[in-house]
Image (cartoon, rainbow, N blue to C red; front, side, top):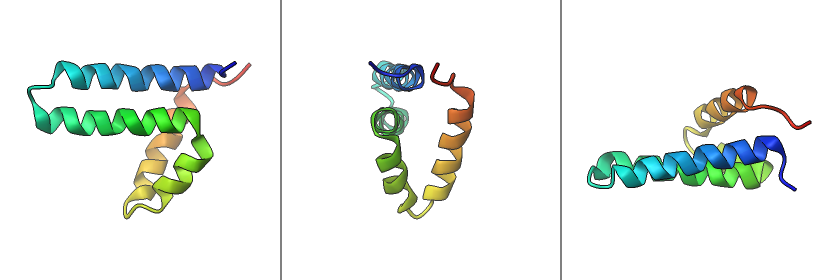
Length: 78
């Protein structure tokens, strides 16, 4: 069974994907939102591997800082 944090992360990713689909006619908004949704899906399912992958990006440390802030906002596992 998925932890509460994993379920919440996947829910946020789904909400971002739905928002991107609703704004489909605005490609400059929809594409980055879908990219964020994919990142959140991957992070919710495989956090360590996703963080290692993102850490290799040129500005990955900023993305990792944002993920850490999001992680602190999400409810923990009980």
